[in-house]
Length: 317
Image (cartoon, rainbow, N blue to C red; front, side, top):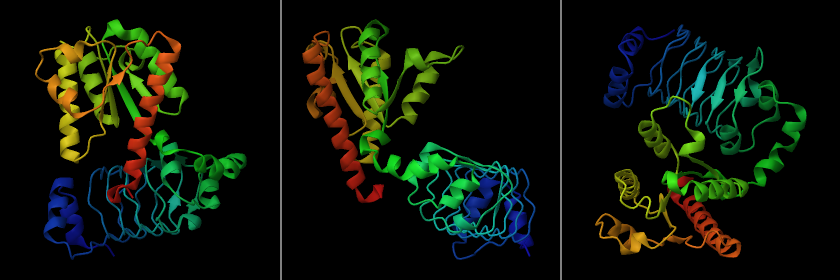
């Protein structure tokens, strides 16, 4: 049976619960048989927790840490697992139906071939790419068509590291023609990228929306020109990108591109670090096909090298 003391602490909210877990690392909470239908557990620390036979129907388990947890015989129908840590999580005999598996790594999740589906569930492309050797039964339980299941291993195996990256192109509206061309060419090469004019929703407030977009993408391609060099917005983006690099201990977030010599000749002090510390892609003659293609190939090579280095780092495994 569920431990009444553990339930009492959990009912006080995620913040209280997580603090209690930190203060009691050796305690393994037990919620066996409890009813948590529709409860929002987003961001909770459930490492090693026993959720056997628990009803989590409709529960929000996004960004929760369920590593090593026991969810055998649990009810997960309509539960939301977005960015959830399911490493060594036991899902044997768990009930699923319209369960959302989004951006989760199921490579080491236990019991995927012994689920009890009451209907189809949702599994996104990020989950499929991250997860190795998913059982065919799990894919069928989620409702994926047989031809897709058959070809999935070859599709995943053909992906190159560069395809895992997403980029945001930051530019002046006066450089729209170049940004549009670069965006189309990067997409065609398998690099998923976005830029403000095309991807803003109608009614969005421009600055907050772009700030958020930049934060969620892994690379920032910053286009320098006489149209953007004095922009406080460009300065802010470059500063935030370099701060992120410093905090992460690597230089693979900001990729500067120039359409003219303005960044080399400017007296703007904030540009000094950019000029001093990294290669600036030269697209000055971008209207010439051959010159543009040569510069694009260099950019693609740099992005791909960063991807390969990232995959080789111990903390990326």
